[in-house]
Length: 339
Image (cartoon, rainbow, N blue to C red):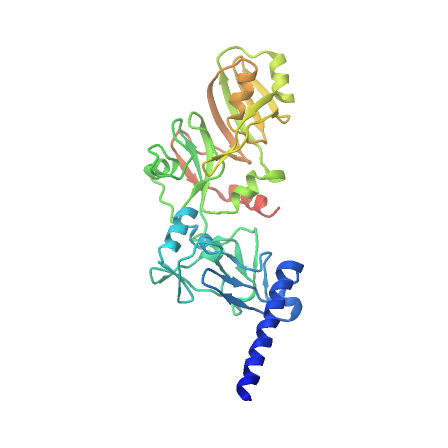
C-alpha cells in the first residue's frame, strides 16, 4: 500500500511539473508566478535553469555555456571545447553544444578541471548582494574591474584585415600584438575597416560594445578623410550629402546576404582640398564610401578614418600605433552602453 502511495505521489509530482513546463513555454507564465524559486530539468542534452526571483535578468534561463569562454575563445572554439568533453558544470561533464545554459554566480564552470572565473562580469552580470549568489542582474554599465574588460584603439595600417582568424596572415590581432599590445583576454574589432583603408578602430573584450555602437538606432557616427583621383564638383558634394543609390552585400560569419540596392542616408560632407573631403556617416554598409564615390565617377585613392563614435586617433601619431582608451574615452563608451 505504501509503495502504491509513493508511486502515486511521484506521478502527481511529475504531472505537476509537466503542467508548469507547458504553462511556461506555451503561455508565457514564469515559475515565480507559481511560487517555484528554481527548478532544473536535467536531460541528456541540456539543463534548463530557471532563475530565482532574486535573479533579475531578462533571460530566466541564464546564458549559453559557450558565452562563458568569450574572454579567450571565439564562439566556434568554445563549442569545440564543450563538444570535446573538456567542460564540466557543477562537476558534471558536458559534451552537448546545443543550448546548454548556466546561471551566473550559481553554476561552477570548469575547463580541464580548473574553475573558469570572471565570466559573469564579462557577460555584463553584477551582484546586487555579494552574500547572496542568487541576487544579481544584467547591466550595460561598465565594470570597474579592469581585469575583466579591456578597451584599445588602434591606427589600423592599410593592408591589415579586420578579422580575428589568425590563420589569415594579415589579421588585425597579430598586427596589434606585434606592436607590443598584450591583451589579457580575447579581443576583437568593433566594426570593420576594409583592407585598403586605414585609421582608428576599437578593439575590446567587451561583448556588449558592438550592439551599443553599431546596431539599429544605436549606430554612432564615423568620420573619414577621403582622397579621390580628381577635383570634386560642388554638385557632387551635394549629391553625396543627400544620398546616392548604391548596391551592397552584407556579410557576417561567412554568410552573404542578398544584395541591397538603396539610397544612402544623408551625411555630412566637407571639402578641405580640391580632391580631399571629410565624410561623416552613421550607416555602415559594405565599402559604402567607396561605392558612393564610384557612383559619381570618382576613384578613391586613400580612405582614412579619423574618428569613430567620438573617439579620435590622437594621441596616436603614426600607422600601427595603439593605446588603451583614456578616461575621457571610456566615459564615451560608458555613455553608449548605458543608453
